[in-house]
Image (cartoon, rainbow, N blue to C red; front, side, top):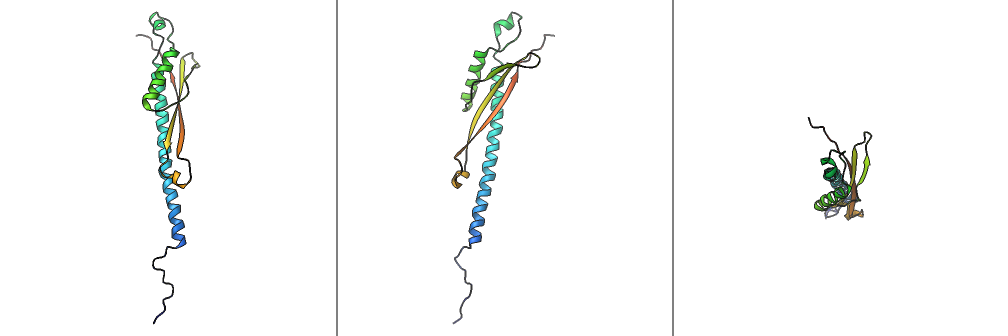
Length: 144
């Protein structure tokens, strides 16, 4: 009878088990990292669109009378909130200011939550929250 030395059939080496675990973590980081970047891009896009929606809420009475064009803040807040609600995101109320040339500005912040697909299995957070910010400038052009 022959003795078999080093018969490893049916056994998994420790190196293979550790390497496989490391590979799964790397794949999870890549997948959820890409998802995080996608959520960040979505947040910036939605903030820009919400700011544009709010910036279109001008004080019509003042503009019709020939006065300076200004943002109607109450209507702008309502437009931003309606846009964010329709998109399924949240954020703080928009802020209003004046640009360096006196033009009205509206700044909107949007908060988007990304649900991690793989990293939560390895003990990371279940969700990642990202924020996008955009500013819309109210520009007027003279009739020509």
